[in-house]
Every structure is written in structure tokens, then in C-alpha cells.
Image 1 (tube, helix red, strand yellow):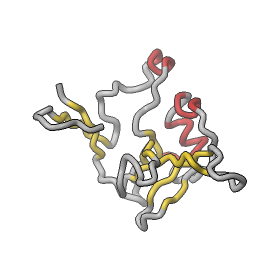
Image 2: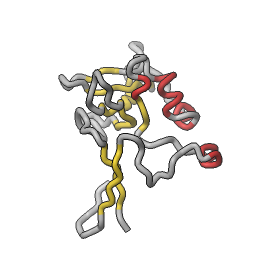
Image 3: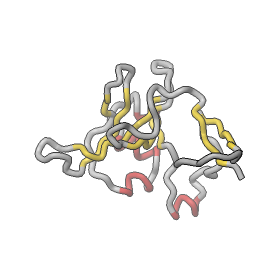
Amino acid sequence: GFIRCFQRNILPSSSVGAMDNGDLQIGWLKSSRDDPVERPVFLDGRRGDGVGEGDGNCALYTIMPNNKQVYISRNFHPDPILYVSGGDFFAQRLLVDNPKLAPRFHFIEPPKSAATDLFLANKAPSNAWDGETALDVPPLGGTLDL
């Protein structure tokens, strides 16, 4: 078989996947007329509230052209229900604070749960989403690193 990857149709503005500090990419800010690049969105899972050091809060941020982290959400406590309950819909309305950025946000992969499988709310995982191109890579040798 092949390994299928999903390339962004518009080049991202910065590194993708993970930051040097261990923060993982969880989503994208789609390009817009005012900001014509795709911006990766990372989850900072070590946000403090000013009282203690890294007390379990999370926040979402992106990287701006000057390589500066810009937080696009307020601190929130991690809760899987935020992810599986409605995906992009709830993230755009509950997590992303900036009304100009909120409609541009979407998760890297749609959340999956028994309910979404039952109601077919997700596209098949082998299909590209808007803004992506599916690329099938044949296993011609070498090592696959994930």
C-alpha cells in the first residue's frame, strides 16, 4: 500500500508539527485576503494563571511573521469534551477569542467519536479537506518515521 499525506495548498507561514518546546500543532488558521498564508496553531499545555507555575491551563497560539508567539485564546482547562463535542464549531466559538481569527480556525484532523461515526459527521479520513491535496507516497524503501 501507500502512505497518504495531506499537503496544504498554500505554504504555511512557519514550521509545522511541533515547536522546540514540545508544543504540538493542533490546527490551522486558513489564509484570508488580509493574511494570505496558512498559520499553524499550537497548543501550549503549560500555561499558568499567575498564581502557580504551569497549573494545568492550556492556550492556543500561532506564530506571526516576526517569529513571535501570539496567543489566540484565553487560558482554559483541558477537557476532551471541547474536542469531541463539536470540533471546529465549538473551538471557533468557545476558544478562539479574536472574531477575525475564529472563522479561520480548524483542527488538523476532525474529532472522531462514536456519535460522529454514527451520524457520519466526519468525512472519510482518506479524503482531503478544503485547502489540502492528498498525496500517495509509494513505499520504495527506506524508513518511515512518524
